[in-house]
Length: 472
Image (cartoon, rainbow, N blue to C red; front, top):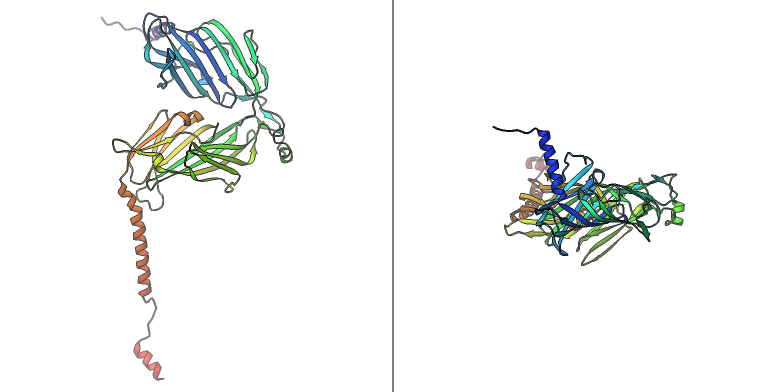
């Protein structure tokens, strides 16, 4: 006789089973550091996890409130055993189980090796968050400093019991106000809470920090990067930006006289320069906007990289927007390699070249040579992928274009992740344009020769008429 359980009962059993599995793990200690020096929030948590259950455990679950999960740009988890790094890259996918923690998003982490019963391992969790710092007040005058507010949980959000924990906020300067607890202390620019003992899962108590931060609040609402590959030995890169100041908006207008007299006091919340870190051996660098080329820039290069310091046409205050583009060329042999299978492998770094900028939407267009085929893309983080064609001078069938799109891009994407594009290319296509140029020049000369030897007069005077005219 077949027995079928109601679906609701099955879900209930799964929830109970999940809670039982989680109870096997206990976080013996966690120290959470929150860096608020930039408009990008970086959080590092050092966890010690102990398996108190009767079975080995192969999975650890990270939990984040939905408000943080939707603004989570990237996450890196490092697994340590006896102080040694065992594995540092995990395929992490979010889940949204239907339980009483409906405002939570879970990230199951598959451990590289099972945590045996009675054993302890270390997990270092590095998280980058955006759009969590809110200006308060939302509008300021030109002479006022920018104040930001950050809200978090004073306890480490986790589905596991925590024996000992603490949280530290690293601040860039003056603190306007903060939540007061008995277990807290302020040491210079660090605000420390804890230690807190024996906290149950999902413990919550709000902590609010209101502080001054006049660092660059640059946000690229749109960033389009085009990388054009030429097998004649060159890579041409063009980057187009639309950047806004995402901080407190400017009120009561802007005074150029006050700003020129004392920029540090009358315009402390603004920024005037941006720094782009270009790859080594970059050359033919330009920087221009809608008006034209901008000469107020400085270019410095060495074996480690090329630094382009750009001065904007006007200072950027809260809510202001500017559009510009930069371009440069790179040697092909530094970025294009040949695999064992005979494919061409293009190794590019994903992300913006401008330092400490949040990109809301980034589009990378990689223009491959005409005749490329068997194209595939491999990246270590999810992106929207598509292909299209681009026609340029002397193109017959068009150039394949690989389009990559990603939202919420931060500098950590450029630092840690690569994008590999595989394709096959026959060098015979290199002669195509040369032959077309030779043929075109040949036809041009041939037409010139025919023109010089052709008589294009509308009528001709006969020899008899010429003789008659001569006798007269």
